[in-house]
Length: 632
Image (cartoon, rainbow, N blue to C red; front, side, top):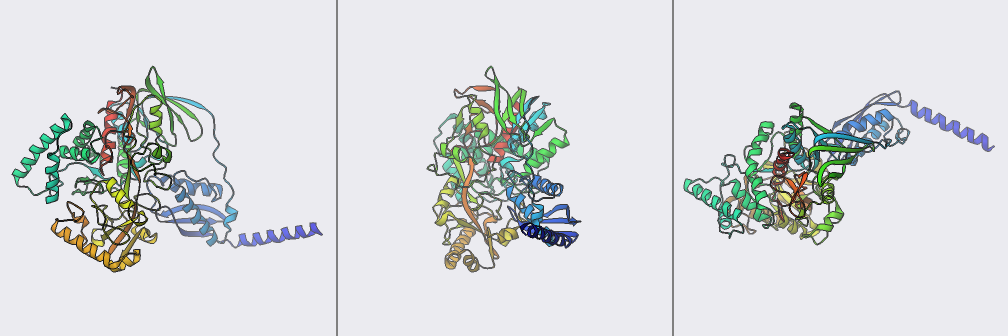
């Protein structure tokens, strides 16, 4: 009886499944799910009870991070007839969104998603040692690494770029992309305020701490005198002023020689980038923590990914001898007779690579913002409280690997305890890509009150934000000055409508309505904005000591927006000790033969606090220098 009953049950189940399968309708289906940044819409073609095709129709996921899953995950689903395919490391939420949308389409077609969920085996690992030879090895394919690779290749050197992630870009690709450079021509439409004039006079009255500061003060005094004599009302700026301001903002802890080389060469590399295809917006602005209206951004790219695409396009257009090894983290430096001669790395298939470089190795693997252990080990500014609860703007791969490799061959380090928190990040993810307003706009806390000079140093802003209820605040903006394109996307390419859906931003026609939406006192917010508008009108007497209110900071009227913000780990100012030619120095201050470094992996350029928008020029300038100097 038991056997007969079991057989009968099996037959009934089989018949039911056959009936269910026969109900499947051939056709094309679409579904939308939530990805990391916003809605992900996927199209699935069903034929003969099989998945014939999968396409991603639209999304706001981050380029280039999500480029691989956009191509690979749909192809894997079709190939394996399963949505249980392997996730793409570093893009898990994007992978999940594609899978979920496909499952929705299967349901629409009358199919059971469980029938398309078989486990797909992991790629088989192999054990093989491979030796390669080249002229130059660059570790890291972010802004510093790509600029170094291009500069070396343009000298006729063969370059191999090792990258831990599955894409080129690093932190540069997810940065805001702002670029500080003195640009008197572009700054002409910006009028000087009394507060800005006063700040220059105070800077020039400082007692010099070394010969270079004395020389820079002398130069700026003459420049300032010439400016005043000219009768100009436009913003005053020079590379020398930029250097003095940056050095002071880092509490005089940086190497002023490195600071000045950055600010002096910034206008030159800005011009070079324009020749490479970057179209700069005509008028610079002042980004959060930038301290002066000299922050440039590209008009033909979203965020810092524009620099990455520009360098990659150049490599292709000029057919430069640069080879990329993606998903291949460097594991150790190879030395011989105290000289660095190569790198050992591990490929995605398990192969071990021994790569020898006849000219030298350039480390450009970034800082350690995503390494919680290192953050708390070195931290001197945040009371060792930068644990896993404190999110980061950094890519997951930015874990200090290059620093640790260099330490093992005797490299010296500088300023490792100085870690920067960016005040204007997403409380849920730590990223900056939900930005839709100028980050120097009015900050208000949950009570509707201002609490800080929004143009101040980033460490000051972060500490002030952490002192607010729940460590959060809002940046207020209006439709007239909102940072959006014709498609309704913000500066990072994310649809503002998606950000409103996710409650990362809020919109209302009036201040009273906006206050109610975010749970603050309407009277407080209205009073705060009225006071703000008065300051913007007079440019004088700000209660928090703000020097100016730029055009993009003004609030002419509704509709109004509020963007939710909190501080997250952003930049590690410390790193390998280098000289002005990017040679890595040992603990005795002597160059390590064959070893160079550029970008956030280095220390000595920013001191205790990096000025906002100095990071990209730092990476590109010193990356270029490293590529020019390696092997000389």
